[in-house]
View 1 (cartoon, rainbow, N blue to C red):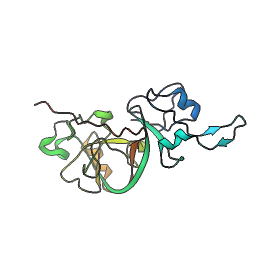
View 2 (cartoon, rainbow, N blue to C red; view 1 turned 45 degrees about the vertical axis):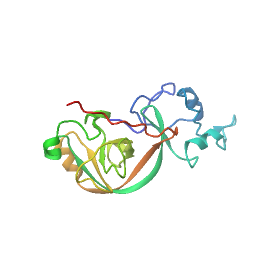
View 3 (tube, helix red, strand yellow; view 1 turned 60 degrees about the horizontal axis):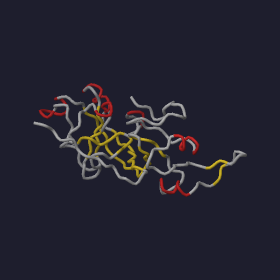
View 4 (cartoon, one colour; view 1 turned 90 degrees about the vertical axis):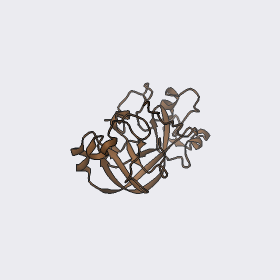
Length: 196
């Protein structure tokens, strides 16, 4: 299970599918990703007082105080919050019926991202969209990689490994955060194609 805040040394760069808040400006420079501008959160003077953010911070978000995290080696920021009805499912026949083959509607295995993903109405939240659901995977951003016949509009289905655990989730009305990539490159998501 991925933790929202990883206890990693400042010299380590976030790894694929890791989500953590961006550290101070010095750490951001140490962890710079080739092709990305620097992502300072704040400038701190020698006396320790915080100064106004520099211009590159404006490239990250609409508001300088936006929390920046990392997902799959790319910076992400919270874009909006949607009130949704959230249920849970498992990758077996009891939840998925005859289509329970371990492959999501996007063509990826149900074990992609360690089995942490959601099913959504892709007209509202397209494949590859990142969402964080309170109470699911410690609130870490997870991708939309599946959809279902009953998942329409503001409904979301979180994936659990077994039917019993999925049933324990129940039906919840939650504020779900939708994330966007802060590098301006969009999701760049491509569905996987099944080979028959």
